[in-house]
Length: 483
Image (cartoon, rainbow, N blue to C red):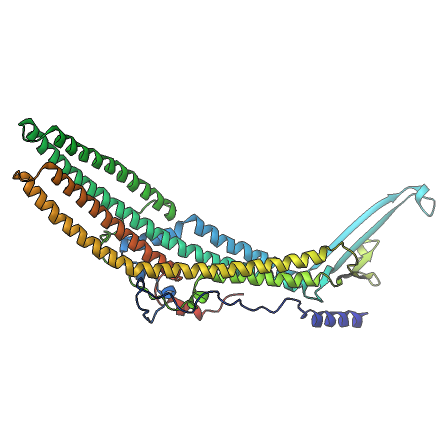
């Protein structure tokens, strides 16, 4: 009997290496080998450090923003959920992997029963006793065709995808905090600009009112000056609301209040960001965590096909135990009380109305769906980087043109004010110069904000924001993951 059990175990181990999982082939990236070229793009530049390996402390030079990002990484609830999801999928993988091994358990039981006389074989009432102690395995499936192994592989790939999802969440969080911070800064600058403009409008209105009282200015001039003042008050209320809402949005991203000990922030027009290289489109396949996540899910779907194929074949499960059995507690471990049980069971699918075929078709369709999702993720990543590269050059040109426009409007305003005060031009020309200058200054702040957010989004699109400091990528690559 021992030899039979040993032979069966060896056979199970040999056949356990069988797998019906299709050979996995990474789908070809459905994007061009180079980034788009044209007037909107700068010439490609090489760099020693890829954007994905550039730490966010090196990319964001504002110390106040660095502290906010660190606070968000420690307290943000979405990032916390993503980390807990990793633990959950790791536990599921361990549960599924445990099915590859037999579960050995020990049990002990005892019973005493009184048997009535009319049911007793001796015709007399009596009490029967039985005690047992056994150790063994129950319903252990021999993985002859790799079904359990395929499910284990699927659980592993799902777990690995959750790790990449956590990286994506962190990268998105870093970019979101930066964009929220810059929006908050820009709206504060717009609020200050509006206050200064309102003061100028009020001074102009008071001057026009005094001129109207002595008959120099008309009622139309006074009405136009008042219109400018009221319009500035509308903008003032709008930017006060936006600044408060920006702070609320930033608080949610941080997961806690904005620290009171923030360093003095850099001005919005200061050098806020380090430049990042774009690299090649193929780099995204290794550096974008959402692409890695999509590929792990594709591998999980591929492994599920193996499990669906194995369901067509017989499954064998074993129940076996050995122990001792005695009618008396004192003789439970005595000589001759030994007992054993060997109970193999085979399950052969014969007719299931096409359910197994449908399950296999469903698994193949799910793989095709995941292939399409993987390719779509690559295309989206390519578009995000291409958009960022187009924005980089064009925003530089737009900002310079807008600065020149503001300077020209400032000259126009000074001339119009001088000519109005000495009575050469009407109040209408002066008000037009004020409004034009205010509009140009607002547009300059908005354009600077758009440029900063586009650079942040490009850094995110290239996979940046995972490492705190440049150089951690090389250190992490030599660490051996713990099993």
